[in-house]
Amino acid sequence: MAVQAPGSDIRGDTLEVFSSSDFAERGFCNRCGTHIFHRPKQGPELAISAGLLPEGDYSITREIFHGDKPPWYRFDASSRKRGALSMALEWGPKLAWRRFKGLFGS
Image (cartoon, rainbow, N blue to C red; front, side, top):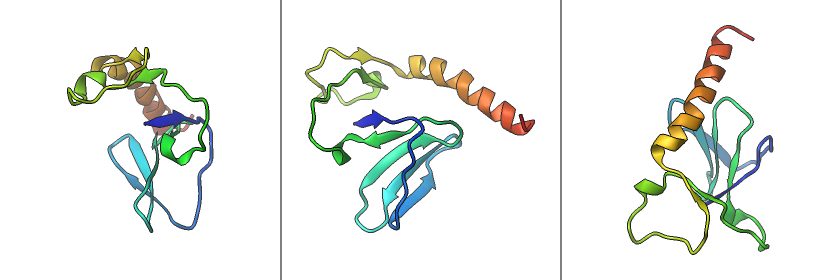
């Protein structure tokens, strides 16, 4: 589970960032292995692991890649469920545009 924190800056002596795909990267603590965040390589989006935040009145508003979850994995939330196709349709054009802009320096 992650909390969206676009534009945030995460840094630290034990932060290790690695490329997890052609378009995304993940951050971990190189001392204990805790997953800290994931984000696209290009763009302001950042998703911080929810377990790192203090207790609060949080709610689940969206579940992504819902069709790929194990059958026993479910939340008691009336959240918006997104499948892989829905996510591809949302992110594909965004990532393609960012890559195109990067190729031509604008």
